[in-house]
Length: 195
Image 1 (tube, one colour):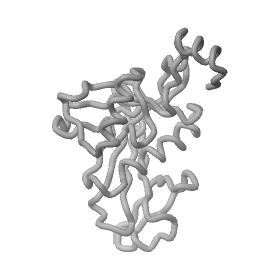
Image 2 (cartoon, rainbow, N blue to C red; image 1 turned 135 degrees about the vertical axis):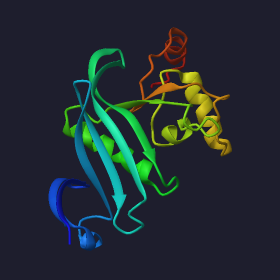
Image 3 (cartoon, rainbow, N blue to C red; image 1 turned 180 degrees about the horizontal axis):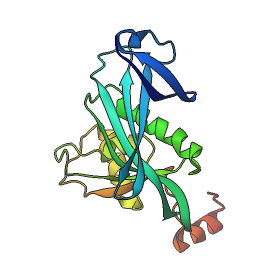
């Protein structure tokens, strides 16, 4: 029997469990656990999380690599935000990606980023099924209202998007707030509509 220790994230927070591999499925904490490790990348401390299921095949997992960043958003500079550098699942359609993004919201709050996170939705890994639609369904948006609207149309039609439909683009959670245009303000003032 092999005994090892690992830092595990559960929905209730960070806990350290002594794990015995043959009894891994018997830990009564959650059906999904996240292993956390800090790594050094060219002097930058980066968090790596690996989520796996205690109910299903333990080889099914998802990974996320992230770090605290400071960005400009909603008209403010130096806003702390968790940058998700890399996120992937080896078992698409099992909810691991959505669970990792829900975890990212909580982790972002825990490290002082107020629940904010952002990422670059890349078309290079799966050019015939880009992840933009998935991220939009998870409540993220881009800084471009036209692209957000186009993503919403794809979602309504139940279509997958390809690299021909969208470029690699940054996406944000919670969604970026757009300033009201002068024309919108005039229209709202004339007809008494409020935001």
